[in-house]
Length: 225
View 1 (spheres, rainbow, N blue to C red):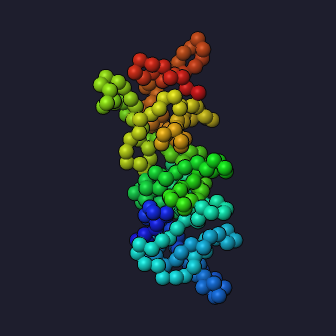
View 2: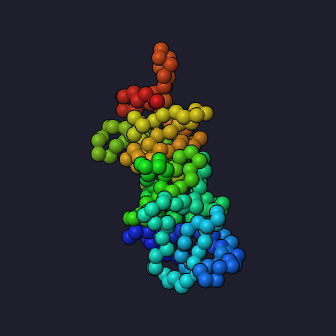
View 3: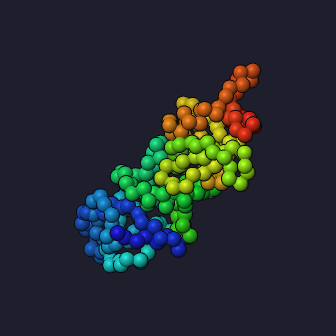
């Protein structure tokens, strides 16, 4: 499997090889269309007429295969994240959860454009996100290890191995009564999928006088925006 290095960080990326011969022999361009893991033969050139073009060259294991560089125009990764938090590369679902898990750790929001991006070192590209880049699949009630007797809710985030404590001050309700919060130190919004929503609902109560809902945790009320 091809090793892809972005900055100083190595990641393995699911790609589609492009299979149609291009007419520009001077460029040495070979386009191919096939699902699968690339065998390290093509380095990305960028987008041309809506297709991703790859320059034919010999690339060995460990050599760079970068995302579009951060200098100049911010280019697309070719990755779409749907409302359920599943990742697709050029229309094909990315089945390798370890790959997606690795990329999830490098999601940021670009302040200038407002787009969600993957950034590793100086390499970056933007994601197409239908709702939020991360999705919450489960909620677990637990005691804080460092504070005996104190409660916390641990969030299971799709594709990510480690649970993350919920910051109840970041909860809000969006369209169609979908519940959201912020994770990864408050920087990334995440959508509660249906099972996680029902698990969290056990801790949500209504204040009828003010027609407001709040999360009850550790003897405190956290009102939901």
